Length: 83
Image (tube, rainbow, N blue to C red; front, side, top):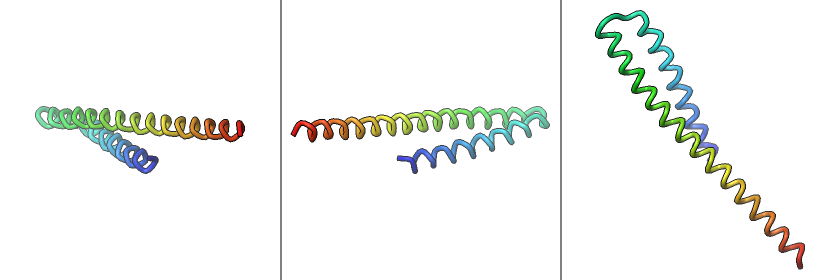
């Protein structure tokens, strides 16, 4: 689970750094080149949004699995105490 999260996190950070560079370079362009760079940045922002959603889902799933494991351990401890 954490491997998946770390992979998404690395992709997200790399994407944000790339978007930052593109955005900065767009400031020095004019006309059609600037429009094209802005299109690239907008597409990258959509990719970042998708990755952020995946990060959230993996994180939520990890928390739910941890809670379920904890609950299972607590329930098994309670049944042991009854014997």
